[in-house]
Image (tube, rainbow, N blue to C red; front, side):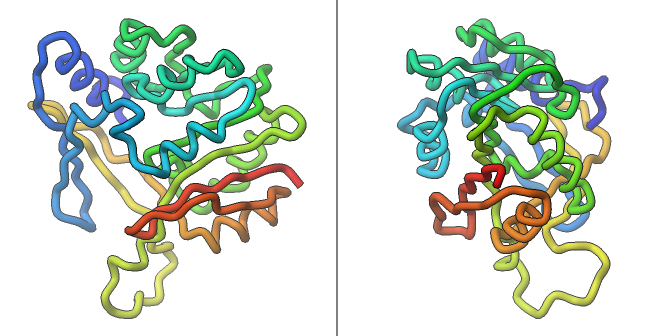
Length: 233
C-alpha cells in the first residue's frame, strides 16, 4: 500500500474528529467496487461478528493486536486485567486515533518488522491472513511468528474460503483463487495496489503443518469465513 497516502488513517481521523461518515472504497480488477463503512471501524464488542468475539475471548497473556485500526479490539481487551495489549498498525492516522480513544500501547509498526519482543497471542482479525499477501509468503510468515511467540503461544487469525464466489470450476492457473490485488480510496486519494490473501482452512492447515504449526478451527461463519488457532507443534 502506498505509505504516503494514509487512506484508512484519514478516514478514521475524519470520522472521529468531525463525524465525517464518508466510506472507504475498495477496488479490485476481479470484482466490482465495494465499500468499508468507516463507522464499522469503531464498533464495540456487541456489534462485532461472532468470529471476532470468539477471538477476543480466546486471547491470553501478552497480546499483539495486528492491524488494530481505530483500536476497537484493543480497547475491549484492555478491560481484562489479565491481558497486556500491544496494538500495531501501519497507518499513522489510525494509531493517532487509537491512542486518543484510550489504547494504552499503540505504535505505528509493520508486523514483519517487529523483533526482540515475545507474545502469548498474536491476534489478526478482519481477514487477518490478508497481510500475508500471497501463498509464497506463508513460510516467511510462520517463521516470523515463531520468533514472536512465547512457549505455548498462539496465533488467532480469521480468513475466508472464497471458493463459493466461483459458480463454475476454477480454471487451471498458477494463481491461487484466494490471492487478490486491491486498491483503496477515500475522497480524492487512492492507494497503490497491494496484495491480499484469503486462504481456505484446508490449505492453511497444510501450510501450517509444513512449517511446524498445528491448526484448530475454532468457529465458522455463514459465508465460509472462519477463525483459526495456530500453535507451534
